[in-house]
Image: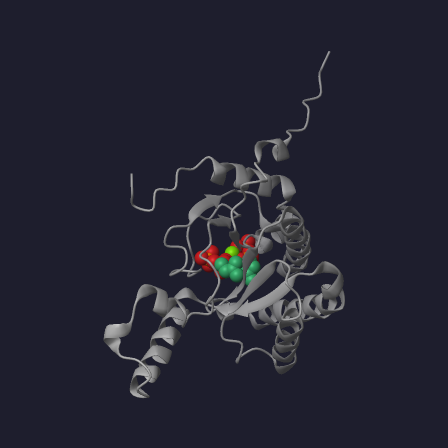
Amino acid sequence: MAFLKPKEDTAAQVDFDHLPRHVAIIMDGNGRWAKRRGLPRTAGHAAGAETFRTIATYCKNIGLDYLTVYAFSTENWKRPLEEVSAIMGLLKKYLLESIEKMERDQIRLHFFGDLSPLPAELREMCGRTDAISQRYDGMQVNVCLNYGGRDEIVRAARAFAADCAAGKTTPEQLTEEGFSQYLYSAGVPDPDLVIRPSGEIRISNFLLWQSAYAEFYYTDVLWPDFSKEELHKALAAYQGRSRRFGGV
Ligand code: IPE
Ligand code: IPE
Ligand code: MG
């Protein structure tokens, strides 16, 4: 007689009283997810957007303070125009729906990246979302849009140099903490855990400065298939790590 294997209780492996404060996710694998189903890549992005909604809500419910997601990199402009336009369209749709639900969800949306090359309507929506978010104090979700870690550092260096030129500060006064304040992430604690689905084991220009001591977790699961169970596995793995920060 065959026995059904009981479904693994992934939640039981997580200590919900000691969660990381800040989780960051490289939402990768949408294209492959679609290809495996014989669908256009854009269908994968639509499915990925739904996963984002589910995971962000769950992260809020379990009490995370910060969630940062990589939605579009400074390198993603290399993709076919059709795909880029579809992603921009999905972002617009998502933001519009989020604005309506913000009061109920109490999720604050914030953006990391250079928004200036984005379509005007989308840019305007990001501004509106950001403004509404100021009224709430729930979990902060940072959406990385036209974001690149190197670009962020170069911009910070430029802004610091400009402050020096304006006589507001001097090179000698610069500290790591001080430099952090010029980054998109100013005021946000560094990510404790960076998750990358889709089987790729690389950072792809994500939070280069901020992830200096982040724990890294990767899984072969593609982002549209990522679930609460997968998040539990990542959190449990994180809780099993010994973070030494260079000490013993
Ligand atoms: C991540 O999924 C979404 C973006 C980069 C915008 P991909 O589109 O990179 O999916 P794969 O890696 O091709 O499967
Ligand atoms: C990283 O994924 C960017 C996002 C998920 C938004 P990519 O698919 O662009 O990264 P590579 O090309 O595999 O390094
Ligand atoms: Mg990819």
